[in-house]
Every structure is written in structure tokens, then in C-alpha cells.
Image 1: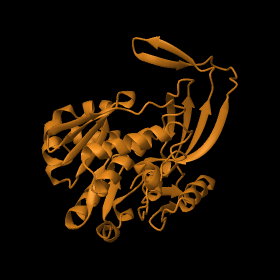
Image 2: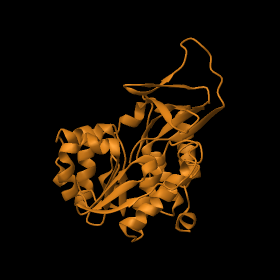
Image 3: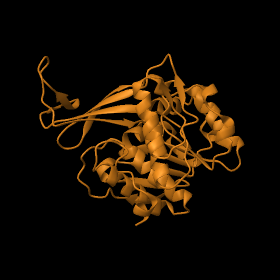
Image 4: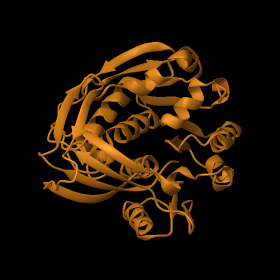
Length: 301
């Protein structure tokens, strides 16, 4: 469950990076024309990326996301079909615009992103089928723009389904709800919770409660790897696999897919972290969030 977007990638060695007390800024001369090295269009979004990731790993996968009825939505749906993802639960709204991003990539592979979420942030409670969630072995939830009522319906449906497990990779909208305690953490049926270091700091006041309520918590730190906690205890540090990054877009989604798949295959959290790191290392060596996603055979090998 999450977003389905179209990503436009713009890469050039001519992007100017300037260090300031606010951080590193991407600066170009206003009104000028900059020649770029690469210009590519791919589909993305957390729901779309992870659905394709799980399908590549051999899981029977469907995606819940929302698009418009425009040319961009055609690209999103076609890419999902081509990768074996069931799209019967995709909501296509004629009055909405399919979301998209423009991703500006520097020579070192780091990126700045301009986002128009459009229909991707419009998932309402009536768009969620409690029946199909209850029929699923596992639900992976990514960012849905902090839609509180939609989250509550998802959590209730999973909680009522005895055989359905849930992993959650929240976006900033969901993290804000957690930080403000607008979601009751003990009522969230989440077994696996995945965030990056910056996101983890956003919810500093509720970290202890999250550790107590969610069985497995993963905090990633980019090139530094990350940490895995199980039932509140630190299990392991995992290193990022050394790989030249062409584009870091989709690194988090690919790690989440590999990690959760490992747990579903009965692997230990340490082994699952290795699988996540392998998937992520492969993805960042390609443009786009899907080209480098590994098959089950490759990720285990």
C-alpha cells in the first residue's frame, strides 16, 4: 500500500553544490540553461516500488495505490503489469492527476527531489478493501501522505485478520502523527518498522514505546549501514555493501523489500538485514528504483 508515481531523472555533473550553515545547497544560475548528461523517465513511489520488489522475489503481489486517468497513469499501470503485479486494487480517479517527481542527481549520486504527490496522497478509507487485506499473508505499508483515517482502517483490518502480518515504512506525514501521539501505538499491529536515521529522530519522544510495541525495528543510515532491534534489544549493526551509487532513489524501498522478504522466508533479523543490503546495493547501481531489484535466486546467492 502506498504511492504510484512517475519519476523524471535529471543527471548532470554541472550541478553546483554550495556548503552553507544550513547544509549543502544545490544552486544554479537563475534564468540560465544547463546541459544535462542524462534525462530518463521511470515509475516510482513507495507502493509501486515495493510491490515490484516483492513480485521479483517470487511473492504473489497486488498493489493498492491511487492514480489519475492520464498518460502518467498508463505508464504506472503498464510497469506494474510488466513486473507481474496485480493492479485490480489500483484506484484511478478521472478528476485527479497522477503524482510525479523530478529528481536532480549530482555527480556523486546524491539527489534533490521535487515532488507533486497528486492522486498518490488521496487514498481514502473507502479505497481500502478490508476483505483483501484479510486475505493477504502480509501487508507492507509505505507512505500514504499521513491520511489518518485511512491508516486507522488499515490497522483495524490487519488487527482483525488472524493470519495477516504488517510491515510499515512510514513517510513524514505518518511520522508526524506518531510524534503528536495522534495514533495509538499499542493498537498498531505492526511487526516490522523501518525508518532512516533522520526519520527516527523525528519520533524521538515515542521511540521507547515503539520498541516495546513493534517486534522488529530497523533504523538505516545510508552508506553507514544501519541498526536492527528485536523486542527492544539491539540485535546487530549491518554495513552497507560497498557499491558505487549511480542514483540513491529507491534505496530505502529496496532495503525494506529485501528485509521483510527475509523475515517471511523464516530468516533471522541479521540474515534479513543482509538481504536488504544486497537489494539496496543493487538498486543504487542503476537509475530508477526498480531496474536493480533482485530476484529470489539472485538475492539468496
